[in-house]
Amino acid sequence: MQNSDMEQLVHLAKSRNKEAFTDLIQMNMAQMYKVSLSILMNDDDVADAIQESILNCWEKISTLREEKYFRTWLIRILINNSYAILNDRKRYTDLSEWEEPAFVDEYIFELKEALGKLDEKYRLVMTLYYVYDLKTSEIAELAGLSKSTVTTRLQRGREILAKYYGDFR
Image (cartoon, rainbow, N blue to C red; front, side, top):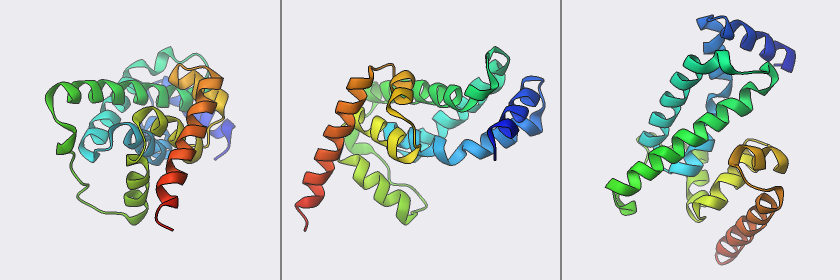
């Protein structure tokens, strides 16, 4: 889908068109899942974060200033909701209680396993860069970090994964 098509859907969604909003969410669902999974590492929490983000977006879509930034705006809301769930979970559960997904997709399993080797701060930037295909400047804006911090975290994340997977060769 071209940017102008997405901007038209956003314009319609801002005028409370439910079908247009649903189309926008469906277009971004796979990326939303991957981004939230990189933070939460738990399918139930990911589902909660996505659901809360969709509701927040529907309620606040009229506040979006420029249609072309819908995807960035949506992901920023998702990241905030994912961190809120993570912070709540840290208060109430032990990290050893993470659940495995009910449906095991081989790609998702490998992604989750690889991301599980990383600290959360590296997981987020690695996911946004490699899965969501964002530029370092966009990641910096979304995560509230400097561009150099994003670059450093990407490099350290790569080094950690290379060391881990290099040990199995």
